[in-house]
Image (tube, rainbow, N blue to C red; front, side, top):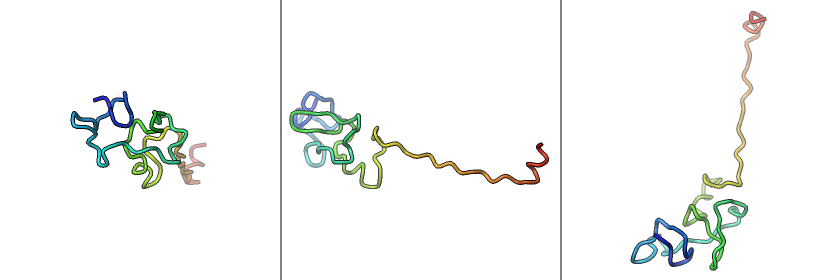
Length: 90
């Protein structure tokens, strides 16, 4: 349904005919770690995440899993080469 509380005009899964069914009754504003993410939107009441109603919970255990501005570094292990097998390959 379309949100009528904070993110007016935005589609929200927590919106019911009785109002917002989220825990606090409304979405919470973004935190400092969310700045720069493509999933944030500016509304009349402030800046909110369009993917999560409480962004602080997404950052609680490290990086947010839906953040677009955070790049995860791929850890590459250098494989150990057996010198005997390497000499046979030549």
